[in-house]
Length: 540
Image (cartoon, rainbow, N blue to C red; front, side):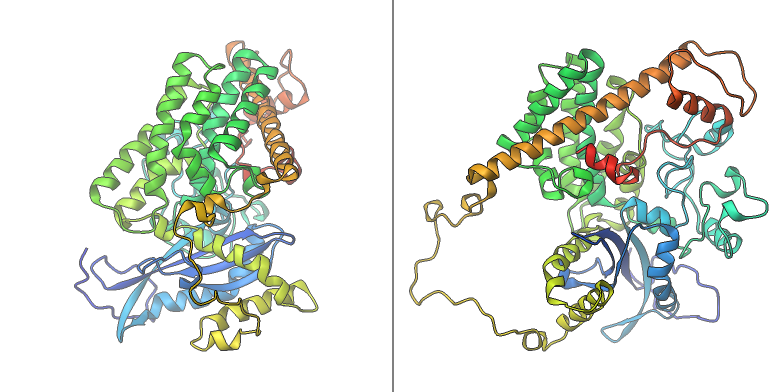
């Protein structure tokens, strides 16, 4: 929409979002935990309407702090000092080229951070989506809410409504002193809709970025996992291990990717793109183990996903036609998979891809320009730079890192940061690499796989990844079969909270039955970032 109106600040009045025709500057504030060794959380500010918005040089790191977890309490310590500055920026605007413009605030990061920032309980809550109050679990206790707000498992049906800024403002007032669990009279689910802690900012939910990088990582892991789970369901544990191993060797030898120690033991962003582009390698590895209908559904999903990843992560404006094609593909991705793989549980990431990512793309013309790549760039720069930021404590190292990042943005940064070590320039007239035989192209550079030890290490990593995925597939299918058995032959009706003994179930099955009866349980399918670190390491 053309900017036809100027911005007139009114700080004496409560803040309200300006209209779309007002000249504004989009500002995206993101936070994400990562880094080698001691994990750190970095608060980064980016402006999407510039060339290469995700480049580290075009973003500002506001804060770096050691971080054990990104819970709501930890976020108050990290972001609390900046909340007032952000509110002042919204109230008074920003000068650009001598013209005062309004500020449109966006919130970015992974789903765990977004939930904690909003005071949301997380991916295992009964209303598990940060953007809308769809119900994640079925059952009598959630039936009324599911009729009102919709079910996350009905992915083909759009949610009836989004969360509102008023709900966040009400939560700020209610949880000013204590979270919901500590209130004298706790709010019910229909009142809090899984927002049970103090939100840090009452942002407009439509301006919460749908985490394109983490959607890419998550969905790229779902599709191979479905094939391994289907093999386990049809042929047993040994065949699932063989199928997972075949996928791993194909990815290693033909796609030339390998799992990493971060991102839950999965593949990083660039590797996820390569897997999507050469998805036929994964399908060919699974072909001996899957029936025709499941193989057809999986191949179709890979084709759709390969097209979606290009739009999802592109850091530039997309055309109206491409946005419309993205919306159709995102909505059509999961229903065929649900039909072929009935145990598929729609997670908040899949739900966000189907409904909220297309809506964000339609309104703001890009997803990648608001993504998490700038955060990843700062994580990558922190790893080698922290050795140069010596201090008496790790907190002091973080302080020096932020100071160095600020100094780097100054005009005289080259001189101030020069330590006298320079790479010797090439001799005059030296021949430059111009053709593949010069051995200077990326694919010709030396890597671990060109050594015997490096090759053995990669194979061992991929074997561990395959075994972990096979174990996870067994857990998922066994849980699904137990759930189906309980639905086929239910015991006598029970009152709320009554223990029901089910033949053939262990203590974990009994606990799950108790949760189902009482209606107070959480989603049994957890996101990878919510697993215990030891369990995540075991699964690859």
